[in-house]
Length: 565
Image (cartoon, rainbow, N blue to C red; front, side, top):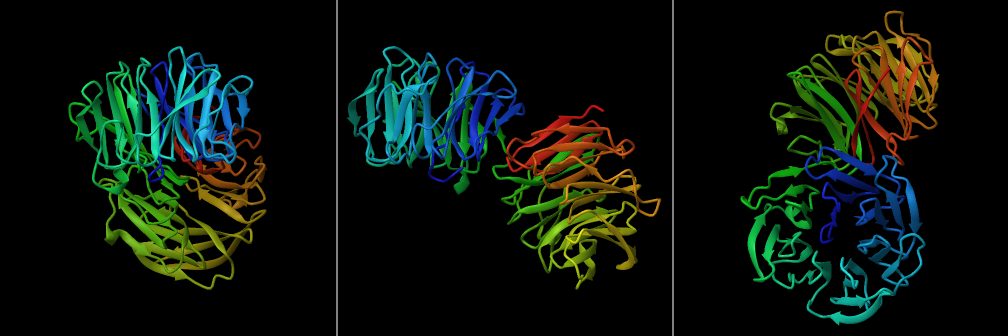
């Protein structure tokens, strides 16, 4: 989301799904059960808009480079049908003709601000002329004869007849940027929304987007005044005002009316299901990450599993607070707390029962922490130039002047040993004696700089991954001797590792977009999840149970996988 920029929410012509964009991705959600979702990640640049074809069989999505991709909706693979570059800059809106054969695209091109073309050849079927600045919005009447309307930053709207589409006249009803234009479903009217607060009707602040009711008798508009208004078109008056909050992040930048559902989207990225009977409280609000996810962990309570994910912008999903900087790593401890480390040089202990932060639960570190591990009541933080042992949210012992660059740490479940992996390809084992870390001179050799490592839940094995793409498991009872390893499979650096609850399998994820599930007793038995997060590297892994694996990535999504051995 971007302040002052409309976010287009696309509707499924069959009424089942809605779609929107985030980063380089297009997200498709079931409108009745938004937990059912899919993601399209094939764009190389930030995606601005995505729209279903009226047939429902294809989606057209446009990105910041001016590229439009038309792809299949009926298959999980979302195969690409056609790809064009109709303008030379950011695409801001897309419209289809009702026969799904023609597409209009507008945005911020260098030579032109819009184009209309045949979907299956790219051949032009008109010219979108008449504007001196970027075009923000476009729509096509879904009745014959076709008509096209556009809205621009030059404070004007424009009207075209076709096909082939030709300029007919200019609309000068607005005094500031025109953000949106939409035809009514019956094709008899169209509405514009502008930064001057006008919807051909009225509002208190800039109106970013509007959407018609299925019967064309009403209209909703989303505004920077943190409200969504429901309009009676015949009377020209607002009959309901939905108040979505008072914070700047509650500004409303998008809306959709689909079947009986009224949706709006806030600057915060929250998607609100509006309630006509209670306009001050949404029926439900969908919250999630809008930035790349760096880490995740699983906490079990009362027979249920909860997934906690931390992102680049400092948000931890499920919690009602945030850290001021990127969340690097997090784990849960025996005290029912979420322990997270961040680039703001802190460790934070969050009580999961309360799901909120307290200043007394923040431990300020001397240097930026890269990794945190827990066992029993103790925590191990690996920082730049330091290794710190903590207990009861207080520092017990600090190792300085390490003589190597520590990258990641792991505490043995017994709380008696701390393993620290370095960029020199070595794992150093420290014994925990009282309140101190003691170097016993025990060092394990890996193939390259350590990227992640973890002890199995029963403490019998230490699994390690490194930049040389080697996966190594050390047997703890056998003096950390190597067990059947190293394994190789990743084509690029593996960065995350997690043990299954069965202590027999562990998963690794890498910058090659792949996830492998390894079997300890049989090195040749491995499960490969290719393109787990297409075009995005896998940033973190966590097991829900021995057959369910959660993965996350820079595509800001969490995926759940069923693992069958």
